[in-house]
Amino acid sequence: RNGTSGNWQGIALTGLGADGSTLSKCDIEYAGNSSYGILFSDCSATMSDCTVTNSVTDGVRITGTSANPTLTSVTISNNGNHGVFVYTNGRGTLDGCTIQDNQYSGVYAYYNQGEAPTIQSGVISGNNILNAGGHGGVVVGALAMVSNNTIENNNQSGVRVENGNDLPTIQNNIIRNNTGYPISFAANPFTDAGTKITGNTFTGNSPNNRMEVFGGTLGVNATWVVTINGL
Image 1 (cartoon, rainbow, N blue to C red):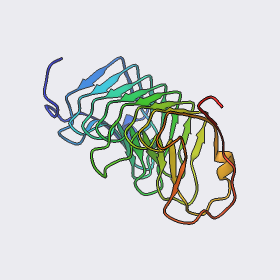
Image 2: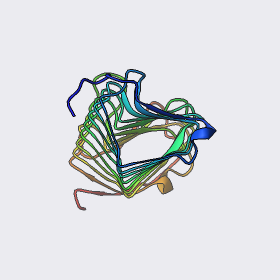
Image 3: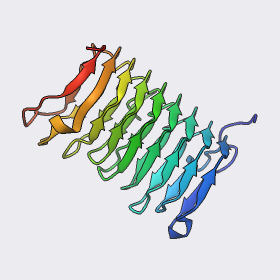
Image 4: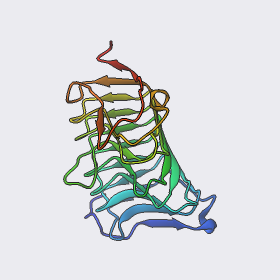
């Protein structure tokens, strides 16, 4: 298990021919000389009980309008870029995954506002931001769903919503001990902010567990119900 990141290209599952493919109980290590440890491109493969570690770039890449893989109980750690990078209208489900200690964001799923991953029941922790390439734990656009996760100990925001026409669904997460805001989102007009950000618990985030609204004018009144430091 000793090696140097970027020793080999990685695994690519591409197109309709890869639909139905399954990876289980596998370790993908020290890949990334083609920008990923594993790539899901326009396919709906599944991956479970695997690890993706020490890639020189992204651990997992998901791309294309037909991309909709399911990753269950996958550990994605110590990669040189994002843990999971979703782009070009990719989708996918991350269920019960541990995404930690990656150099940029744990999950980066905002590229052109069309990405729509579901991120649930996982642990996203210890991810860092070294430059403008990411913002900590989870970076998403308007179509994502982030629910029932523990998002902790990330550098900068726990969840950051980049500029879009609406908010994603961010519900029932424990967001704690991040160096930035627990949730940050752009202030473009939206109509249902109070129903999309619900049931989250904030503890130990800076500054003072406040959510951040940035980059414009909040177009509607909204009330967010959260638990802060157990209260």
